[in-house]
Image (cartoon, helix red, strand yellow):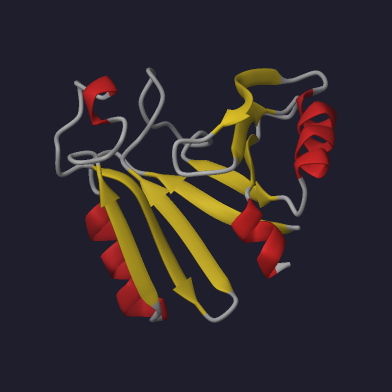
Length: 140
């Protein structure tokens, strides 16, 4: 398994991720809301808002977006630990364990970008995103 930090920004994800790229180097990929498979469902967002970005530099992976919950960004909810699981079974096991006493935000299900994804807040208030895909399995 691998944990990746996922940061939510209040409309300045592009600026922040480019700043981190300048500091840390690496390759930055960006997916905007406009042209994405779920653009029609994100009517409150601007087309150039960042749906997802990823900075990879050696062993470092940092993800970020302008996506945030209905209550906006507050200290504590702007960082999610992304757990990349090596099997579908491990994803389900880890999700069930981590959500015990916590809150299901998004049950495990198919992700539009591929594989399976689930999101939860554990009993300590930590946000977790869990993902599995064939691509992750082949890299492991």
